[in-house]
Length: 307
Image (cartoon, rainbow, N blue to C red; front, side, top):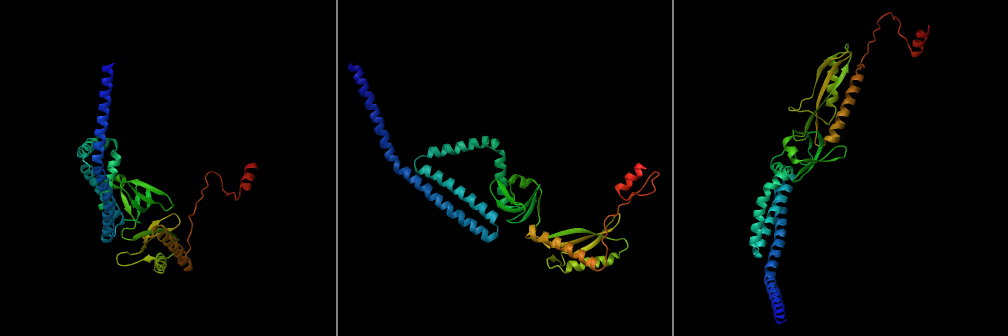
């Protein structure tokens, strides 16, 4: 019984000693832990200030909100990671920070295969932040998607289509697919066909069309952007003229489209004012066999069939 009691006493003393040692170590560690947390808090504040400063500075210098926003986020994220590593070392957890870095390096290979698409989009986002074929509110066509650029994020580019849809395109697709920018220089050339009668004066028709183009204030005409009309096709019943004219595409969804519609209407009125007849396609009916008369209605056709 004495041996059992002494064993219990020793075990209790060991637990008490361990608890006391752990408590003393924890109390001793608290200041370092508080100091580490303070470093993280200060780091987050500093990262936010520097990220905001860089974003505003880059935007004022380059007038590029996409790149400034992207760089601001990237710098803020990087500074926060640096301060987290510093806080672990300040708290006496240098081995932990080294282990985290080692684990991050080892897991990077595994995660690289598991999240290959995420990594591609992230790297593509970095490339696009420095070198890309569009800016905010540019009208672009990326693959089958057509709309205005709204934001560039780490993983995707957001487009707003003209029918109100929000399209999120992976940045890797933006890098690899053809990108057509309709508003980079602010000009776009529309075209449409006008059919006149074979007996009409083609040169006079061209003059009427050019007069309609000159009278529209939204049609752009200068040494670089020349509007013109050219014969396009000898169709079945008309000589088709193709009209080429330039418009402003800063607001491609409305102004450019309205200008095209208005020009078509003005061309029609100018031609009709000069007495031009705008014929429709003529359909030719040929009769084969013994038929010599054309039935004027279905009733005539039924009469012929019954007689």
